[in-house]
Length: 161
Image (cartoon, rainbow, N blue to C red; front, side, top):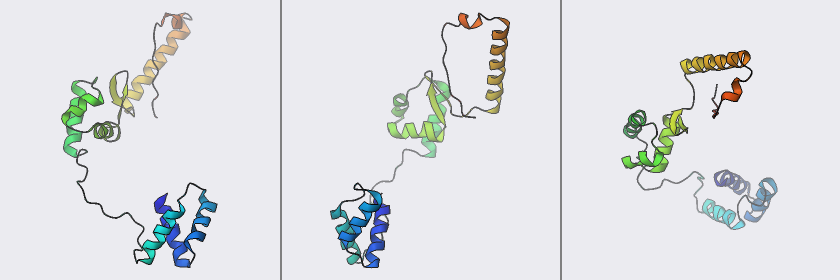
């Protein structure tokens, strides 16, 4: 919210409002958790000193390098070999655990079900096969009313369609 508050503070500064009045307006609009009075005064000082840009400043430091196309491909190649891999085991590729989680979930669109990584979305072929299997299951229930009693264990999965 600070950037949004920063824009509001800059707006009030340019209108000639005081820092105290600006803080009161922000609290009235967004609640007591918005920003402290001290923070509003610091923003006003920045604007008075000619620093009128509320955007984040550039920071030095190394850019994130773990989520590279090469690492994504390395993780992609690992999963089919052993689908029971944990994220920690994949992180042994010298990739941080957070980066591995990001690659598996965001880039490869997989999540862990029954100790195996599977796609978030079913392909058309998988949807068709699932529908056929479900139909067979329903047909068997219609033919044999005791069929459900023969199931020992079951698992449920939610699929996006």
